[in-house]
Length: 316
Image (cartoon, rainbow, N blue to C red; front, side, top):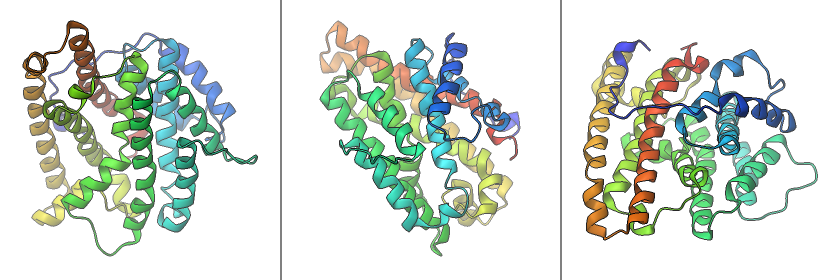
C-alpha cells in the first residue's frame, strides 16, 4: 500500500532498546516449540515480529519484551495455519481451538501434544504468572474469544452468505486478538487497572477504537492476499458490495473511515484527565490509569508503523 493511504496518527511511536535480546530468545523459543520448520526461515525473519513487540510495548523490560515477541509470533503462525485447505474445514478447526481453550481452564495436556499446544501452554503460563485472579479471568475469556472465532472464520470461507458490517465486526473483533494484546499492557507493565477505570465508557471507547483501527488498516493491506483465497471477512469486500465500486475505491473508503476513528480516539484520549478527576481516583490510581491508556495508543501507533514496513504484506 502506498504512503498516500497511510493513516495520520497523533500519537508518537517508540521502540524498545531490548529488541536484539528478545530476538535471540525468540529464535530459541521457536526451536523449543517448532511452529516453523526452520525458526530462521528468511520469510518469517522478514516479518520482523520482534520489531512489532518492541514498537507495541516500548517500555517492557528484557524478559517482558521476549514474552511479547513470542506472543506476536504465535498469533501470526497460528492464524496462518488456516490459510490453506484446513481453513475451509471448520469441523477440523474447532477441535484444535478447543484443546487450547482447555489449557486456559487448567486441563492437563496429553503426553503427545502438538507444537501449537505446547507453545500456547507456555505463553499462557508465563502471561498469567504473578497476575491477580481478576486479570487472569479476563485474559482467559479474551483468549477464548480469539480462539473460538477461528471455526466461524473457516465457516465463512465456505458459506454462501457473506457477512454484513455487523457480522464482520463481531467476527473480526475476535480473530484480531486485540483484547488479549491489550491485556498484556498490564501484564508487561506489572500493574492492574482499577475496574472503575477499565469499564468507564470513555476508556472502553478508546480501547475499541485502538482495536478496530488496525483491523481496518490491515484489511486494506492484506486484501490482495485474502481475496484470491476466499476470505470474506474483510471490510474492503463489504464496502465494494455496499457501494458497487472498485477495490481501489473501497480501500480508500475504508482508510477514510479509519482516519475518522483515529480522530475520535484522540478526542476521547484528551478527556481522560477529566474522567480521572470525576472518578475521584487517587494519585497512584491516576498514574496506573494513564499508563494503561498510554499503552493502548502506543500500541496503535507502533503497530501502524510496523505494518507499513513489515515484509509480511509486501507480496500484496
